[in-house]
Image 1 (tube, rainbow, N blue to C red):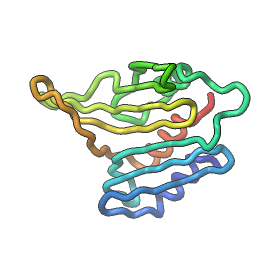
Image 2: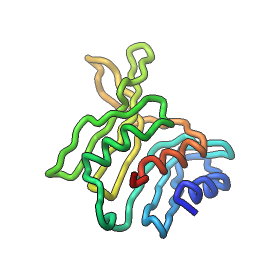
Image 3: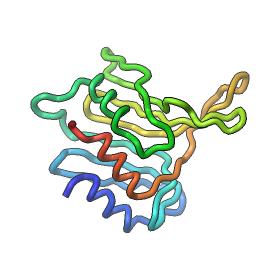
Length: 160
């Protein structure tokens, strides 16, 4: 069973009211998903944050951070907006991806942010921001079905 299959199975049984975290590991791939949600039911979740961690660096021909970021930007299609690579900071071992075009609701902006750390961690969040002069941003929850969550996990962890 793959990570996305295990995750889909665990999500089907997970019920949450109030912020809770579901942790799902796949020993074969070495990936662990920590999904923090404000609410979870039989169809989907109101996701606060999704973090994927790899127990060890990939063996053999590991993709570079730049390649991993570019592959995620191409591959992730289950979010409201497509992602684009904003920055790859090789000395820090981090890459930043954001929604290519944030969603606009009046003066408010909504966008996804994915932070990659080395070849071992990916963190997904959604933010709400405003145009200047009130340009502060705050993290917000976002709704995804179980299928979309599993696909997102697959897209973030796929080696090719």
